[in-house]
Structure formats: structure tokens, C-alpha cells
Amino acid sequence: MTGVWSIVVGAGTGSRFGGAKQYEELSGQRVVDRSVSAAAALSDGVVVVLPVDDVADVGVRTAGAVEVVAGGATRSDSVRAGLAAVPDDVGIVLVHDAARPLADPAVFERVLTAVRDGAAAAVPVVEVVDTVREVDGAVVDRSRLRVVQTPQGFDARVLRTAHAAGGEATDDAALVEAAGGTVVLVAGDRANLKVTEPLDLVVAGALLAARGGDGGDSSS
Image 1 (cartoon, rainbow, N blue to C red):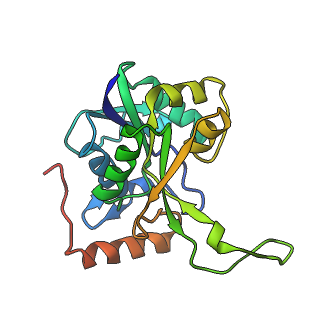
Image 2 (image 1 turned 135 degrees about the horizontal axis):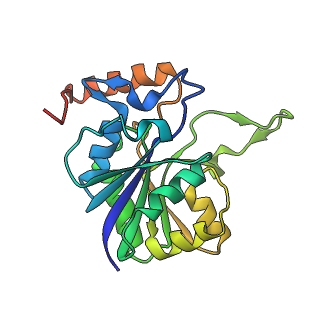
Image 3 (image 1 turned 120 degrees about the vertical axis):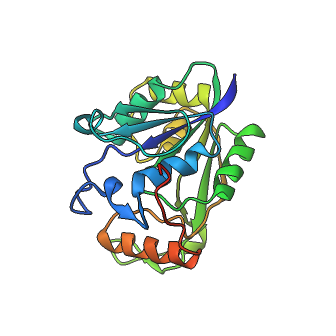
């Protein structure tokens, strides 16, 4: 069991964004292409999961070994579709949101290191900086909370086992944990935002500009 493959999940409809956010342009490249490029830089291959109607018509503009497959009705279904396209002998699988186009290589490296060191699953997290209340008004101790990001990394065999039962979760680490696997937390990056609403795209553009532009189309 060797090698690293990534699954980039972009099969959502973008209901909160108001459209298919994964195809929005961000400083000269589409959101999905930036996310795939980030994953491809540290992977032997990438499976991109897109809406079924887009698979034939929406190319992924990035270098590297990339396969595009159709997603399912839920996020977990989509990850399972991507996982089915990952070669059986791959040792580590990364799962990354197409809507996180600013993931830094250092975050990928920290996740990979944790899995290589023996973790069944590794997830990047950042501290909660706002005061948080429950719906009944009670204040939550934010020092005990962390916000989870992607990429998340997994021992491939553990991830396949966790998904074999067909369960549903908002992220794959939760499925691994439910199956008895240990989840290790590593440092995330506050700039690794998820594009959920139109304002997030504006913020992502500003962050890229602060990095020095980082524009251009990788397919050119």
C-alpha cells in the first residue's frame, strides 16, 4: 500500500452561494481548478467529483493525473464515488473540498505527516475566535472547540472500511471515528476558507492579492 491520491469533492449545487461556486473565477482561475492544483502538487493522482450533468462538459484545467467522476445525492455518496476511482493499492487518500481554493501546501504536508506517522485520520483545524452560544442562549466554552477544514487525510484501508457501510456525515473523519478509528488534529490555516457565499469569493480574491496576485490560468 503506497502512494497518495486525492479526492476533490465539488458535486454540490451551491444553493447558499446561488449557483455552482466551484466554477466561479478567482484571480484568473476557477475555484475548482485552484483546489485541484493544490491537491495535485502533493498527490500521485487526483479524482475530481462533479455533478453528474457536468462530467462530460466541464474539464478540469490543471496539470497532473486527473480523473473526473460523477457525484451522488449527498457529500458522502460523492466521496464514495471518488474513492471507487482510487487504485486499490494506494496507501493514503486525501479528501479536499473543491470550495477551498486557498489551501496551503503546508497544511497538506501536516496532514500527510500525521497519517504517515500512523494516524487513521488527520484533519486540519483552527481555533474558534468568536463567542459562541447555543440556541437556548447558553455560552459555549470556545477553548474546547475547533473549526475543521480540509484536506483531510486517511489510511486508505480505514477510509474504505468506514465508507463500506454507506453512512452519512458532514465530513469523512466523522465516519472513520464512528467506525472506531482515531482522528488526529493538526494545525490548519485561517486563510484556508471555504467559499460558501458570494462574500467568501471576494475575501478569497483579497487574500490572493495579498499573496502577490497568484493569478493566471494553469492550463495556459
